[in-house]
Image (cartoon, rainbow, N blue to C red; front, side, top):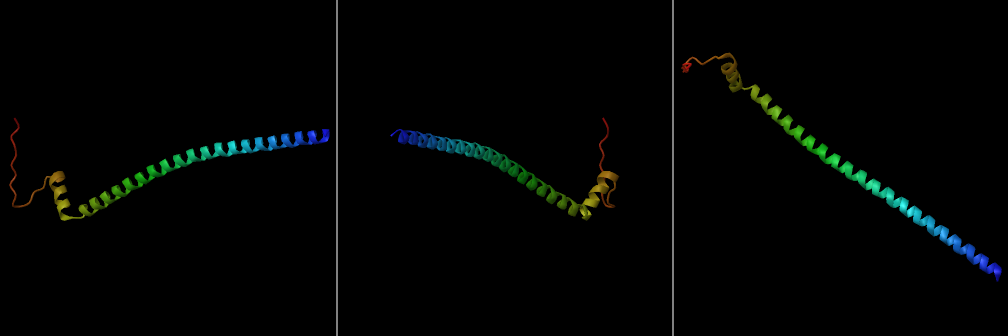
Length: 100
């Protein structure tokens, strides 16, 4: 009978040890999964931010393309000639204000 008691104690301690190891492993896995979720959230936020930057840059590129097309028109050339060089067309009359 004494052997059976010793054997039962060993079995109980073995089962408790294995159960403890399982709990430790579960805790370790849970902790790591929480860290991975945090990293995933950070990466998703970074991805969203980068997508916004891409959209902004694409809009800026479209605006530059429109400006480039406009700069090739006769209207743009006339506008620059008027504003920067003060040129006028032959049939135009210029009215100037007197300085007060």
